[in-house]
Amino acid sequence: MPFVCRDHAGNITAVSDRPGGGFSEELEASDPQLIAFLTDRFPLSAQAARNVLAESDLKMVRLVDDLVELLIDKGLIRFTELPPAAVEKYLQRQTARYGLQNWSNLIVAEDDVL
Figure 1: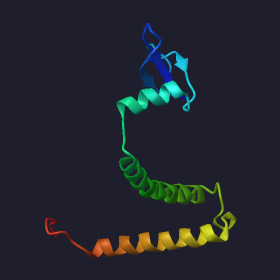
Figure 2: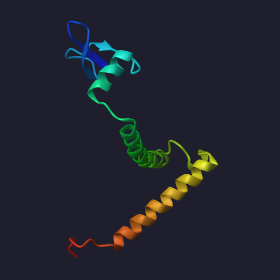
Figure 3: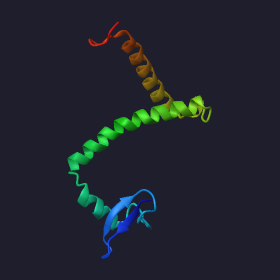
Figure 4: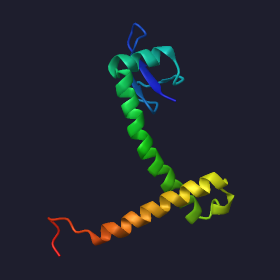
């Protein structure tokens, strides 16, 4: 939950993810005053917001791949516990990633010295 700092009139002047240093009031992320404060300072058009989400979606996919691999490697989940559709998607991505990694080992950039 975010913590806010307010001026003497009660307006939000700053936001932090931690309390302290004047950030003493904790608000829900859905608080209308907080949303208004952030929207005023970080306006995004609808298309810009879609672009940000699309870009972060690609990064999240990679994060989820790595997270699933880490959980399996640590024995916290078993590959066989995943739903069949998830197993299929995971295997497709892992096969593609490892295949690309093998190809990248064969390709030498022009500026690489052999």
